[in-house]
Amino acid sequence: MPSSISSSGGSRMPSSQAFTIAARVIQQLVRDRRTLALILVVPLVVMTLIGLSFPEGSVLDYIAPALLATLALFFSFLLAGISFLRERSQGTMERLMVSPVSRGDIVVGYLFGFFIFALTQTLIILLFTIYVLDVHYYGDLWQIFIFQIVVITGAVNLGIFTSTFARNEFQMVQFIPLIILPQVFLCGVLWPVEQMPDYLQWLSAILPLTYAVDGLRDIMLGGKSLIDVGIELAILAGFAVLISTLAALTLRRGAAD
Image (tube, rainbow, N blue to C red; front, side):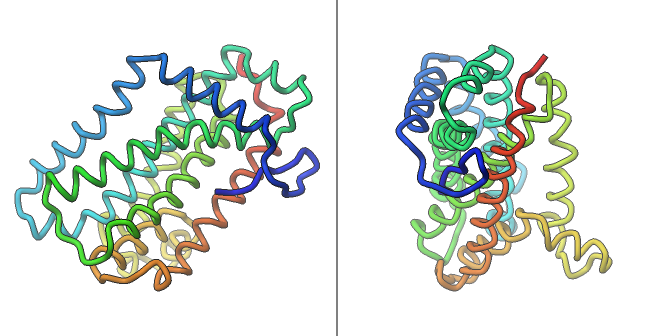
């Protein structure tokens, strides 16, 4: 996971204040039983519908890597974005901004807090896909999970960063068709990137979901290891660090009306 970014923009390790913020976020979400139930149940409902929609096992086997990458990005982005916006709406962010806590510690603290629940959702989706939908794969399950951890780290950071530009939940939801849907269409989820026009291929090359889909396909369909998909991992990790830096730098915009 990326290190905290200090107020001056330099990189340093997260302080105990970041972990205090993370612990408060976790406690708050755990106490919200309805939200917690949705975090656990919604992935199961979605994956059940997907399984029923693709009765042919061979088809589901092929699209499973792209689905895992896309759902990890979508659920983590939505969870972090909405939750972070709620923190701003309740005035929590304003109190933190006038405290001695650095903006980097705030971002990392919320990253850790949201990451636990994003990780839970991703694990539910992965295990349900493998053991209930009976999707066949060739790589090691633990390597698939490690790769997904890198994907959701970037997605959580993306949700935090994006929410700094929204003033209410309706505006935050509008970022989904702006940020998530283009990646679904351009990153090889629905059809091969190689068959797209050149200008769309260039656009696809700067989108994180492209590397998430390619990496998971290489592991699950090609039986490759994390070392073999090292380029994709490095790009996704770099994306997570970049977005966390931008989130820290734009946090001053954080007071929601």
